[in-house]
Length: 288
Image (cartoon, rainbow, N blue to C red; front, side, top):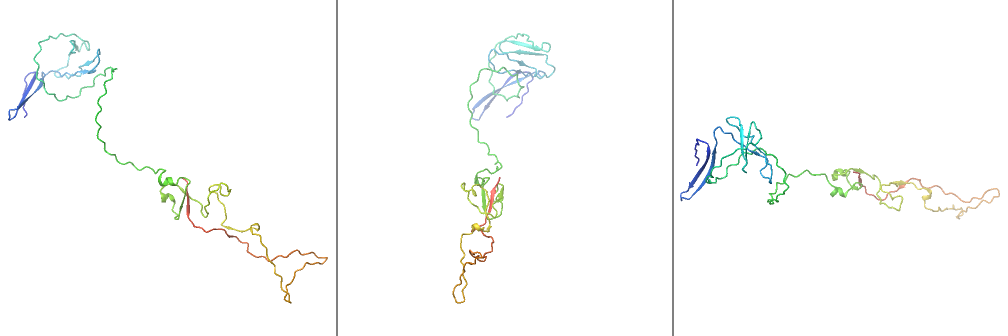
């Protein structure tokens, strides 16, 4: 239920509302209303601090007071501890004592309900730092868990998994000619051992003591020293009488003695196949 009322003069008024229900239950509430003169300025006090340790110097400033009918010429202060003062346009910040008559204390008025929060005033002066540390406040309740953020981008493959199984220097065998960088998705690879057999390293054999040494022949022609030692038999021709002919030394005094006979040449002297049974694979070495 809304209602309006017009105040004709300035002053402080206490508005009382009594609300009654159909069972005659009721409650009351009081609000204070301050009506200023129509032309009165609207005071605004700025202070350097709201709390400090005694003795403390507190600065006050009423320069932000809003004039209404005309410019402000005097600011009268009551500091609440029995000390009063005034500022004028001429005196500036000089304090001028003012004696206020003290009247009888009036009756305690109704306590009104809290009014709406006013607008934030200007920032006050920064007061002196205190050497006293205040007590630690209560720990607040844990807030709710925040939203789960979106998944980040997939990072590069680490050295674990397949990449770790084939580090740089490892060898990959395959029966297809596709580069392992395409098959596995990582690394830089070079094809090696093309047309060559693979043999294990052996430190005590100078032919096989260093990795990636090469050697050997696909075909080989035997030298005389490589031919196994052997003998050739000789067959004497038969005689007309059916007996075997004989070879005898020439004993002519003027001739020389023959010490042996050469057989006819045999064989072509070509290279022979030097391959064991084999199975062909693509061999790749990871270089990066």
